[in-house]
Every structure is written in structure tokens, then in C-alpha cells.
Image (tube, rainbow, N blue to C red; front, side, top):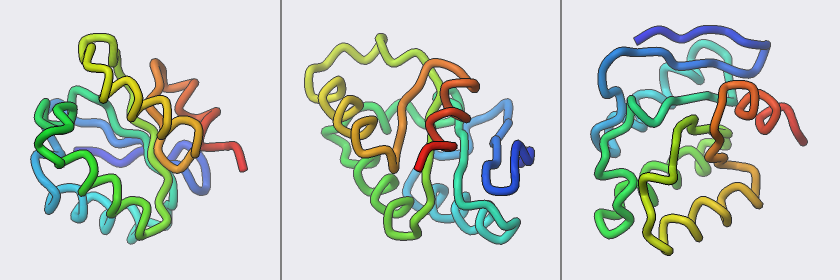
Length: 117
């Protein structure tokens, strides 16, 4: 895993493997990012366990609550059309409206979303 500085406050997390498999991995990532002075992060869908995108597992809610508790904004970049459930679609829409957690299609969209507010 590599943490790339995109701005004073935005970190891009780059990896070839899964980096978030469970809640503990999410908390570890928050600690690593925060320790390096960032309060906003870009993570790629491919680096998150597929169970995250199955809301019945509650993994997404638990991990994203940790980001919220630590006041860390997050953008997840990916193609979310492969998760066709209405509950996931509603979850993504609601998250994007609030702006703390954003689900976007590109790195540019992620940077733009995290640069707001």
C-alpha cells in the first residue's frame, strides 16, 4: 500500500491488493492517514472487500461510521453499477448528498468532491 499526497489534506491510497477486509483494517487505514497529516482520503473499490458492498453484512456502515467519528472524509472510486440493489443505490445517493463519504467514478471526481466545503 502506498499513500500519495495529492494536496495538503487529500491522500490517495494505492495498492494492488485488498486493503480493507474488515472494520479493523478501516481503523488502521484511518490511523495511517491521520498520522501522515491528512483528513481526506481516496480509496479504490478494488481495494475494498466485496462484502463491503453487501449492506446486509453491515461492514460498510461500521467502517464508514469510523471515518465519520474521526472526521475523515472519504471518496471511494469505482464502478458501482455492478451493485444493483436498491438499498445500495440509495445508500450511495444519500452518502453523496451529505459529502462526508462520496462514491465517485474517477479520481478527478474524488478530488473535486473532497475539495468542497
